[in-house]
Length: 185
Image (cartoon, rainbow, N blue to C red):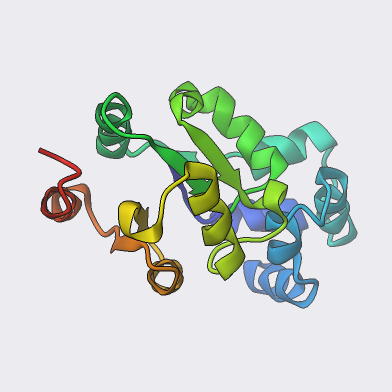
């Protein structure tokens, strides 16, 4: 699964303003960090958008807010193939609304050995504390763990925590790198 950025046209529907105006307002309110760390409740998020021009119902807001996910089938297949052989944990910057929707849309996520979710842990990638939590929860050292992410800052932070970290650019590029770590055969 992959969280795509909310498309500009959806932001414009949610805020009734231009994408750029809403982006500036989100940054000024530090909304993304507050949402990811659970500081902002679902009603706070809805309130932000209604204060910025969204005139829809809460149900309409939820539909738009949660419409940014698509499955990356090769990554799902990799997850399922590893699951039987190795412990697999999910470390995600997310929020209650998104993860509730993800659980419904992608039921295979429940097969993970553990979930480290930023909104529950009150910290997010690339903060060092979230990697410490993940290692402790998995019961492994950094050298025993493999972390995959698509953001260079998150990869660098994981490496600083001693974790084998791989920048995801494509499934085809990832497999040989996992094999080199004896993760895939």
